[in-house]
Length: 138
Figure 1 (spheres, rainbow, N blue to C red):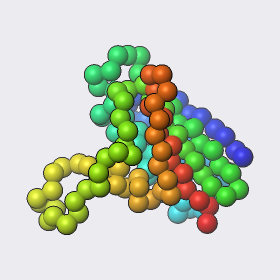
Figure 2: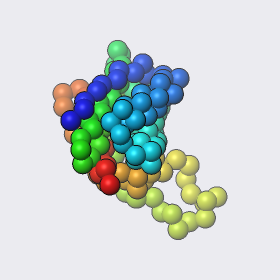
Figure 3: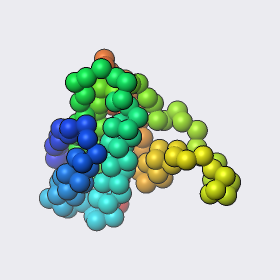
């Protein structure tokens, strides 16, 4: 199993570096383009959510890291941050039956993660949120 970790500054400007890193690690491990794209997209969403919603109001210094574990059968990523506790696995699915103009803004990021990944797990350890996303390599 190939394991790597990337530490990020809590800035949106770090997102392109995250995406490049994910794509490079996936390419080195021979992960199919579609899976790498989905993984990069959900990690972009997860890290952006941490920066916009989890870190404001929490005491500095702020930390964000992403761990990537690529095995023969699956790819797993963990987003670790020291922001406010938030368990995305407990959020209800959005009501997609409403017309777009009647829906409240936001709220689709967790839905996107659920749709693109095979699993989403959360735990709190000390002062850290740990969000684990995994996808089979089919």
